[in-house]
Length: 190
Image 1 (spheres, rainbow, N blue to C red):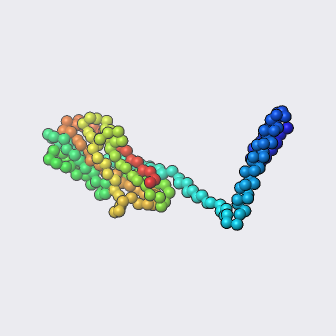
Image 2: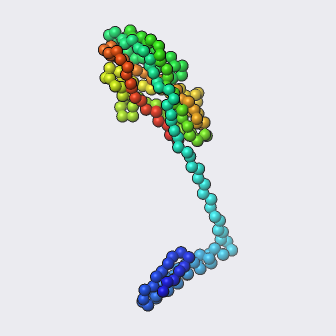
Image 3: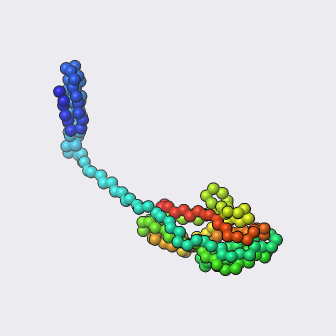
């Protein structure tokens, strides 16, 4: 024998279980009648609530131009920092190492895409795991990174181009060659 209710199914196998099923149905019915009685009292109110949700699309970052420090003539005696400005794209040798720039530099560029009007944060760092970026020679250290941000911080409208610059420490003993360094760009909704 099967008994169906709107909320559950009970299967009775023998007559001793029938009494248990009848008692369970009675208890369920009594609870339901109590709820109905309370809901129909003169002072009671039942109001459905509303739940809203806004699902955001993923945020994405696309590199559209590599950060390039260009051609550098290494310093003669001591390590020297070369700073590529994220706002202007200009490169400047800092300190008195004697190193020079020889052109071909450009700031990095990233397109950040996501939901317009959503606040987000941006982190540009030499490395997530350590104080300097990863370069394919120990003679170079990518020591800091910067992104050009509009006055007042990050824009709320995504689909933006963010320019990236940084500071590169060049040792006097750096042999001639082409080198690659890695850095991190992270963006996410707040």
